[in-house]
Image (cartoon, rainbow, N blue to C red; front, top):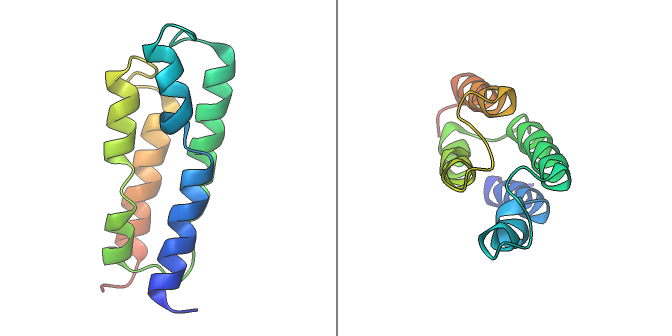
Length: 106
């Protein structure tokens, strides 16, 4: 599998469980609260999926930069769904930093 195909597969995997697309709209419309337990479960699962994707063999530093979770996490922080000091936020940041440092340049 070439790098672009690997990257597209990674992006699709992340997108399938992305809570921003569907659930944050519910929060914004007041149909769901930012602290809703169900939303938390979905977000935690998404973080787990994201971390797993970041460990995908064959991704280069350039490819990983395209998968940078920071913009998506910022949306969750801005919506008040998570706090910056939440263990999952910090864990995902560490996983991303580690993946970048261990990946081949490219």
